[in-house]
Image (tube, rainbow, N blue to C red; front, side, top):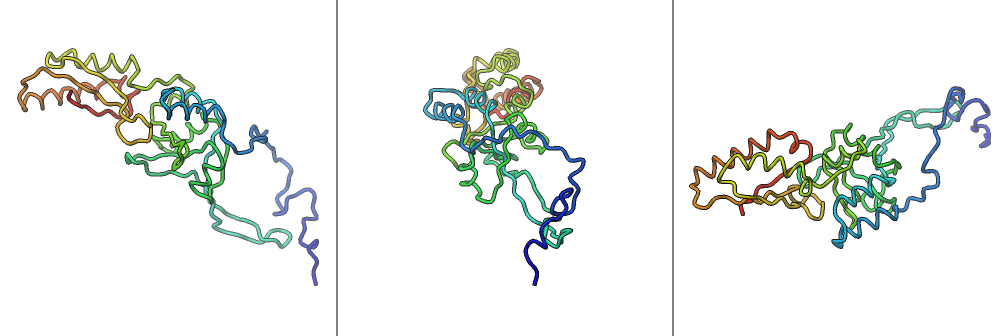
Length: 258
């Protein structure tokens, strides 16, 4: 008959798997006191946004100052017997999750709280990180979207330009209110006399990827033939496609003839 203590680690210089403690270093955990609840400032910004009292920039600013939770899904792929007879995890896959978004892009889901993550997937393991690290992780994993709290009332999508701004600690302005974007469009439309004026509006007001990021409402000279209209739309597409400002600040754009 064997007793439990026979399988306990008797070597104080190594862990239960027989790996020496020597040479190991432990980083300070900046989130040691985190109880897993959502940051109040972030929840306040999301509520104000949903009620129309704040814009998307306010939410992104709150996100960049918040602790977020990255979900990891783990699966044991190989086990072995440890130095003292116990079963240990020899190999396990830990991976950052990527999801398909409504606009057919790759998205990194993140969460404001453990509760929101559990609603999404009870098996997910929360890994706390500041927003800049999250944004950098999204870039490394080729995700053009970060989805905050998917499947919750607080869901909010962050698109490519805003991800880049967070990663670089730069100010982000929604393209519908970005002066550089307006000027870039004006540089294109001013070259064609049939383009009379335009408005640039938020195309996805709830920030849930239900439509293009911005909508360009374009007013044209009346009485144009279908052939001429097609030529003008092609010129517009080429001009916008050649703009570095549009490429940097606009994720997606839809044209509507007003």
